[in-house]
Length: 120
Image 1: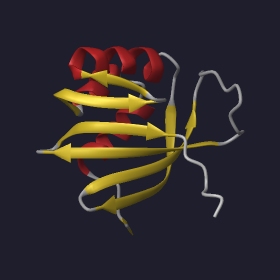
Image 2: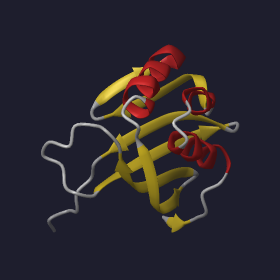
Image 3: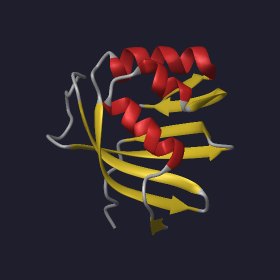
């Protein structure tokens, strides 16, 4: 993995999330995209829009990007999440890894995971 700059549709996605703009966020995805967030799958434009409206814009989520990596053409964005979501059993600073698959300038897949360092 190598560090890269945040550009293109992923930069637009993060900017749209931070602007709390449902339409701009949804426009970064393909119509058949999928999102896996907190071990739940959202398949297709309607499901992704509902997820964005309720859990991103509705919870006023923002992302402070800490790291951007390229992994064989896929992009990993690690960032601190803030917003009005349930913080039960979460650390003070919530760093989530976002695994983006992009094809033809649109997001086809996004997997959001709260990772923890390996014990060994």
